[in-house]
Image (tube, rainbow, N blue to C red; front, side, top):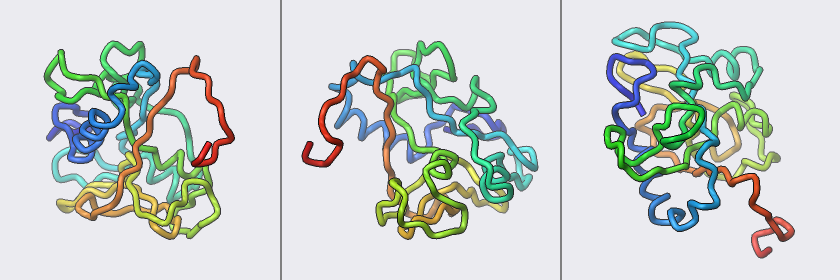
Amino acid sequence: MYQSGDVHGLSTNSNIKTTLDNWYISNLSDEAEYLDGNAGFCGDRTPYSGSGTGTTETYYAAYNRLKNSKNPSFKCTDKDKDLYTTPGSSEGNGALKVTPSDNDSTATPIGLITADEVAFAGGVYGSSNSSYYLYNKANYWTMSPYCIGGGTALVFYVSSSGVLGSNSVAFPNGVSPVISLKSAIAMTGSGSTSD
């Protein structure tokens, strides 16, 4: 989500959020009772350099954590603005709904993986890795911003060779939706695709 002139704005759904919302409504809305709307998805938009507004070139905190220092974090720096949760959640911004300005809009507890989560799983910025569990031979977006400047926004993504990298939002990558199950849900089976 974004808002012109506000680095942490929430007034407009991005194209990828609209895609996730539509997929959720078509595929998971009947399972909403099993999903945890209080669990959030952190789209850390904290600037590392620059202001994040206007024409100022801005690099975001994940850029420093993952490209420069190789030090991922599960901490969501600004939970009130960048922790995406459903309306009525006890934490976060309550923005996970189909229409940002509509108080009666359908809640959509779905997001994307963060670049930090990819790094904790074995993805390294700029290095190929085909042996970690998030490697699936496909390009897919994370929700972590990399930088904005010169009329281009870059976001972290995972490449088809398992590289954690960055690319322009205009580049056609896949989407791997992420959900959180309620802690009381009991799972059975071996974890294989058939069980």
